[in-house]
Every structure is written in C-alpha cells, then in structure tokens.
Image (cartoon, rainbow, N blue to C red; front, side, top):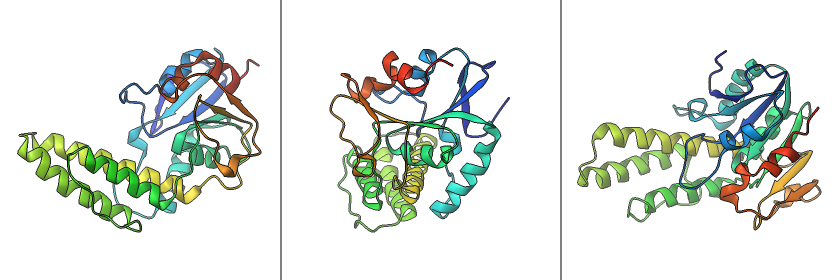
Length: 234
C-alpha cells in the first residue's frame, strides 16, 4: 500500500497503525529519526513516517495546507498511536485529535518568528547575512533564500539543478513550520512527553506526563527506552 507523504518504516503486516510525524526521514547530520525508532516498537505495529513529499511544494495558506495534509493522512485508517518530534508535535496532536494515543518527543513551540529564525540559519549556512523582519511571510522568505542560494552556489559552480532542489527543500521546510505554527500546542493533552537530557518542556505542555531520558536530542529517537515508553506492548 502506498500513501502520499508517508513511508512505511516497519511492520507491514502489523495490526496496530502508528503514525510518526517529522519533517524528514533523511539522515541529517547525527540526528536520529523515526526510522531509527521503528525497529524498537512492538512487532504488531505498522509504523508509518511522514516524509518530505507530504509537505507543500507550492505557496498557499498554512491552515489550508494543514487541512490538505489531514485529508491525505486519512488513508492511514484507524491509527492506534501518533508520535511527533520537535516542531512536528503540533501536527501530531492535530492528527491524533484525542482519538489516538499521542506521544511527543522533545516538542517545541513554533511561532511565526521561529520560521524567520530557521530561514536566517539557512542563509547563514550559505555564508551570507539574513535580512528579513520578524513578520516576513513564508513565501517571501523562500524567495529571499532562493536569491541568496543561486548567487552563493553559482559562485561555487554548483549545478543549477542541485540549487533548485535545495531551494525547494528549504521552501517546503518553511511551509511545514508555518503549518506547525498555525496548529500550535495549545490545548494538546499528550499521553506522554519524552524528553532528552537537556530539552525544556514547552509551557503549553507543563501538566503533561513526561519521561526524561539521559540521552542527547540527536540520539533520542534511536533510544529503545523511548520506543518502549511510546507504544507499550498490547
């Protein structure tokens, strides 16, 4: 079975569907992701992870993008548990909608300013200095990033096709963050919040049950104890 924007990570014949929400399943530096967590979940779990193909490739309203993503995700069927990492906590909560077990890993609050901060970090990785007011819209940020990238990478002799792919990925990431900001964490009642060694709990989740593990954020999703806590055996 194929579901747009989702990738089966394990347990194709599993009877309990687990949906795991994050921006990417690609290996980014030393950061573990849900593909690392999936093998540690109970064998009766069919684990689906969101991937980059599910995030908006074209401009649009963030709430409309959320509604479209929710509609596509309905193909997952009856979901037993929803897991969310970092910014993806908000979308995980939206998908669970208090009908499925909700477990969040190192959740963060995403505000409009957060999107600008991510844009600025991406520009600085190009060796340039960002110039965007805190209220700059997502599409303006994506276009400004593209201008910087085309210039910086062009000077380095990087092929235009690679530059275009990078710009598209950054734009999708900014739109994903805008979706997370539009949904927010307010009102979420997760069954469990799993925290890495140094991660702070967002104020909106201060009353949530929590488990803190003595691991770095980079290794949190590779930790077997995190998986055992997230989805107990039947």
